Length: 248
Image (cartoon, rainbow, N blue to C red; front, side, top):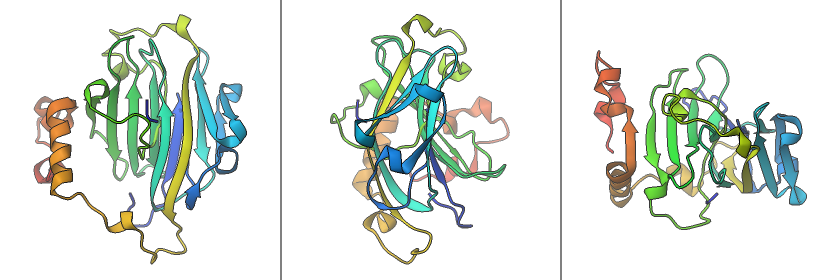
């Protein structure tokens, strides 16, 4: 499978882990895992291979693993190809995410929920602003038409035994299938350093046009299986403000 910013100028970090975790450098070049990332946990469960071009993360019953970029960044586009856990990956979460630090942190999550063999992966997204999240959406990836091996900008983490990743505990992790392995390659960052914020790149001013917004709405209508903006029972005092203002 193919592999923000804030007005107060809070630097954000890209994190990846299995449990998967990573931070990204502020440059406009192809990356090398040896040069751009540090393994943060998991000991030998995280391995950098092929001269720094491939990184694998493993999850077993004792621990997961993760990595983190050496540098922080404010603005940019991050591309990474991710190969998710194959076969029966139920109960695992492979994530790729951006996060600042502190109790009022900002965070953008893309989390891939493992599946029983033959079932589609579920993409679980969330956004934190000023330390507050609760903005989850879920999509069944196996149903969405896509071109193989197309790089997609993401951030992430992969873990095991989350209640929300196992349908409230109904889906059990089969530890006889461990270790569960996720792979990362073709990291590329097109970014603006904090010392050159006046520089302009196409992605800094590019937004969704009408066709792009229609495509997003089509995906939401056809493949979304959960949307916090539709969960009235969860918000008895009223839906979050952005649910009423969204153009999408």
